[in-house]
Length: 138
View 1 (cartoon, rainbow, N blue to C red):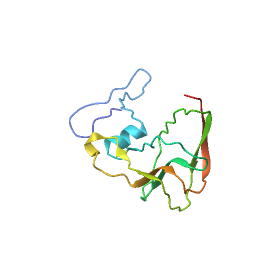
View 2: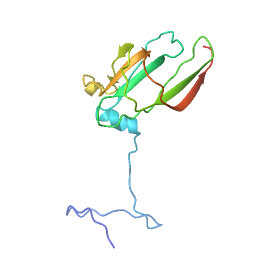
View 3: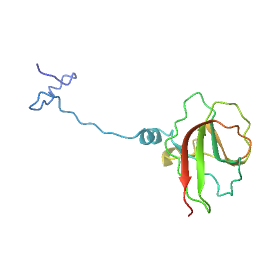
View 4: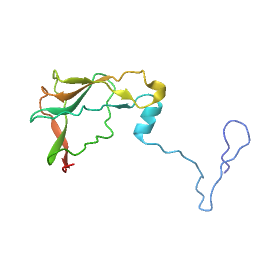
């Protein structure tokens, strides 16, 4: 059996010694793919002294399209801390310092995110804990 390119150019597919089709693939992470199409954003919380009960960074999806969170970077503080990362579906009215999502692709820099962000947020109800991060003194 011969596999041709399907476009009538006479090109044939290569098969190795184990009768496997030889292919080439370019692999990219989900965040790289989203960035290339202008759908990857970064939110940066301000450097605040977060009080007990405050939320360092709150991001709420305002779109029907799922919001995929890829990475959260948490730096040390002046005391040993355990930070909890929550997710939730409760409707809430957040308050705090507004933080805009910045598009990761320079080509789409002016495209706003379909999400709202707040730093040093004080009004959010607790959600489901999905991770805990312990930071050492920096």
